[in-house]
Image (cartoon, rainbow, N blue to C red; front, side, top):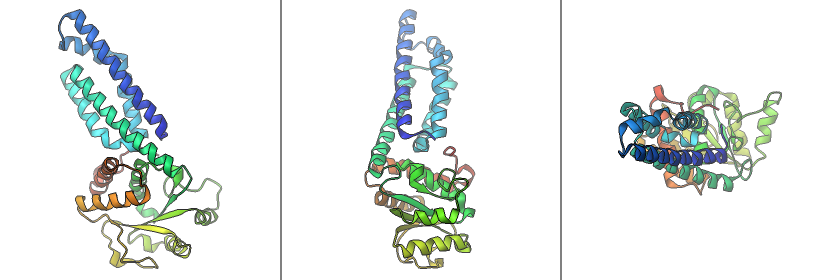
Length: 287
């Protein structure tokens, strides 16, 4: 995945390309004495700047989960351009608005990252059963969308978030509890079937780590075993969209105080879409 700073530079470059496309369109229109002439606007479809832009935007989406919420807007815009067979000035303007929105989103995340720090003040430990890996992946994308880097997140089922080849996994896990750690329990029937998961819960309880419980689909706090407080509110993934969105916002504010409401809303919508629609889930990109 791309670092946030690299993504910011890429989106800034996209805006510059839009400005160049506008200038090209105006020049060709003036030469043809007909503003917004579709024959003139169709020339932009063969312009290398447009072809490269389309490719680079797709590459950004595949490598930057933080902007995944903007995919639908981009795909709709590309479809309208393809259908029209030309790129009018209005379409270029719409692109610029989209890219400016993405840039603001990335800058908000970067500000949050500067506060939390890479591998710095706080790390997030996702305690789970590997059978629930897909839910963990969705959560990791959500956390990255809030500004956390992969090195700030501990999740043994996700590449680059766990021990390295050659590490003793139990020694590595034990070392994590010496960090300033916030534990996220991914609670399910699977969780309590795993000796390792229950041991992690015990270790977190003994070391008095702060924690948040995520109640996975088809599970409830009433089924919880172990030392955690069953009366402490967590994030219940069985709630309807509005209820889940509200709990995700509270969770995000608790762990990343500088993130904006708009960014939380975008990340939450993508999280809910993945959780509630299994056929379309976990498509934010690749690790």
